[in-house]
Image (cartoon, rainbow over all chains, first blue to last red; front, side, top):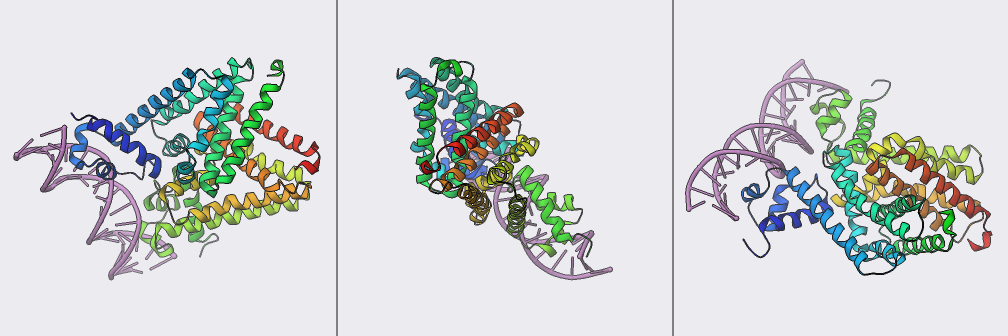
Length: 194
Length: 194
DNA sequence: GTCTATAGCCGGATAGAC
DNA sequence: GTCTATCCGGCTATAGAC
């Protein structure tokens, strides 16, 4: 066993290739070449392509949880935590303009394939949904907390799709500014309305 | 030649299959089976798979243009025309919850495949973008017309992705109500601000 | 754990009879 | 214009040597 196990390396490379090329269009040969092992060796670690997808989704769930925990632990106010989420669109803008959102595009693809793993992929978005709902609740916005969380998911997914279609960075920055405005207007409104 | 030419039937079936299963995952055999012809006969009408995709995109451009012209010709006020666009999300909710938006998911897939046709697919969204921009201009909103049009595209694409992920019809109706509220708030604001 | 070799299938694409 | 038959290549997956 090396410092980073071959299995972990396979999952890491498969994750990137599924994001950049799509799950269906990525072959075992592509992943094996990226890892630098033979196709035969591949099957020592994963029996089927679906097993790799499963591991990739688990990895993404894991990393998403860690990211959310980090944002939580940094001890900032809920508003700043929500801004961390929003600014993912800026931080990842180059890849988003090329390939869209890794989670949104995977969910869309698996829905069309009617793939058994589509619900596990949806759980990744569910992690953001729950976490964002918690942030709004922490701000005293209770009744509408989940609706606001869903709206933030809608907005960011929409920006990702349009950004990948038109490849316009100024557009991303304009929409992100709009999201931040929307958030601040929410926070000055009487909490009883929310 | 029959009432509906075989070529047209191929494009129609391919359009539906690309939407419901994705471009990459749809094979010639799938389309031939849907049309009811042999694979060999297929090549009499289309030399390559990319040629079919090209025809499907042309068909979608054509039908989108016709739909926008119809909305325009109905003589309603620009606000009502914009509402026609927004309510596509309600009218097509069943298919959207299963397969997402036909245009958005195609653009996302072609971006990942780095396919030569990705710009032609983006033009379909461009038709909506231009038409919506025109509606805002007709309402006296000049400076921000295009930004508002883009924002409507963002919102509807975001709803489509999240609807396909969580399969929640109440969510779609809630977001559509939110879009309509946003629109009406825009229209009561002083035009000079926009 | 890693390799080579290969099976078996399905994809896009072609040739040629009718 | 439609068919059957077929080619070739890439795909997932397996077997077995090292």
